[in-house]
Figure 1 (cartoon, rainbow, N blue to C red):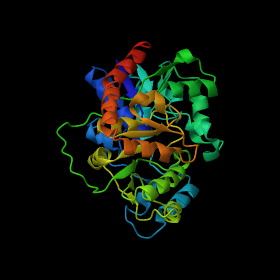
Figure 2: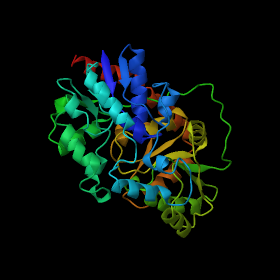
Figure 3: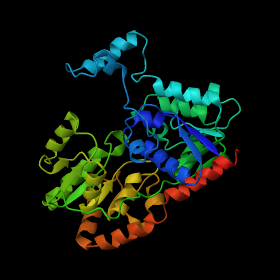
Length: 384
């Protein structure tokens, strides 16, 4: 069975949940004997490289890099280059090498099933009578319109592609429920395929890189992620437990966040760390707790990362979190001021960390990339 995947997720993400899930699935599908091709020539994606999925992939090039020959000459040159190139008709910042290559593979028709890895519908004219299967990771733009424009790319393209897809897979029952409720999609056309647990090297040796107790916040911090409300709860935590710090990963703090941290009196208590996989594992392992205050996620891979690194987990009682974590997490209501603080105090004072860690290990066994890939393979087979 031959499956063709496109370039989208691996072009738009260096790291991230969408491209990571595809890399895991493709790797396991190949282990099961599936002939998986990815229509990509250039990418900076970490998972493509780590799993050697496309050995001859070159670094991603951009129009603005070519304009300045890859040199950093002055502040704002990328913005200037984009505007100039836009006037020249180059609307996409990236070169079209990957899309053109993928179209070339589509035209050859040497595949049984096609799967786009995001929502660009460029492939439709080239499918002919071949089926396409797609994934919807979440319905965040539709559920949080205050953070997205009405003509958001995902919103528009989902409406276009979902009715045309041969089948759709989603990572959680909650995402399926939201998809079916928001778009006119037959529930029989949607399968739930949860993400798998991290497959770490068991020989990894932990040596703490942070020498004080801390709460861990991982990933993006915008809008529905509830970072501001999280900081407010942390300010109360720190007033009672002066030894507690907050460690955040992801991009560096912007000026608004720095100002908010300062106004809450958390200036010396909030620390940012850029984290590759080894650093992130270390941060999980030695944290007092990983806290996920987000209002919504399609699945929440960091939950499984925390479980896999023996880290107690605290979750907003929302979205798919109870579905994913079960009884292996402490839940709080992010809409009720003081609730996260109260739940943290109960956890911190009770000494239940070992019990929570064991529950996390047990819950983790429920998730397997191998099982996920097997489920996806069965969907593909139904159209061959």
